[in-house]
Amino acid sequence: MKVERPEFTVLSGFDEYYLVNRISGGDGVLCGLINIEPKLFATLHKAFENKDFLTVEKCAHQISILMKLYDTTDLFVTGIKAAVKAKGLNISTYTKEPVIQLTEEQFDNIENIINEVNESLLV
Image 1 (tube, one colour):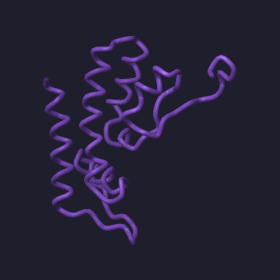
Image 2: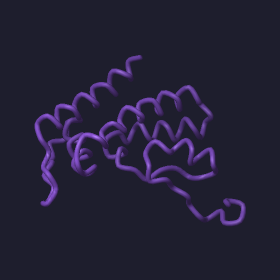
Image 3: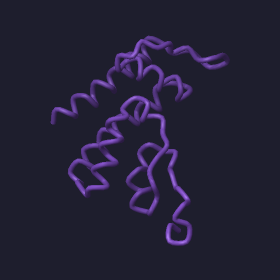
Image 4: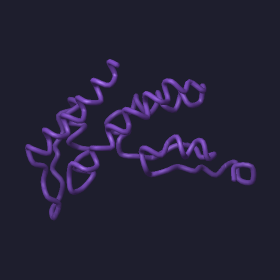
């Protein structure tokens, strides 16, 4: 595809599909988790470009943990906002009705996922 239309950019909308996209000749992802961990995705991209597959594997593992965030709330935007807040940016997690608002239990689950990712950095 790139041979025929090199100016055409192919992005995936699924965070965990970065590697599949790139291996298949695509250009990357446009995803929600980048709002939470932009450095992780930048590191993944740089490692892939440099063929540093050990770093690619570590980044992919952290992304697989972060994917749990999509199952914590009814609407993924609410979970993304809560994760950004859990990372330390004091933002509102309010989402317009009829969306069900974030519960304390959901926020605790999101904090646990963020902590799990941080612990995986230490390994």
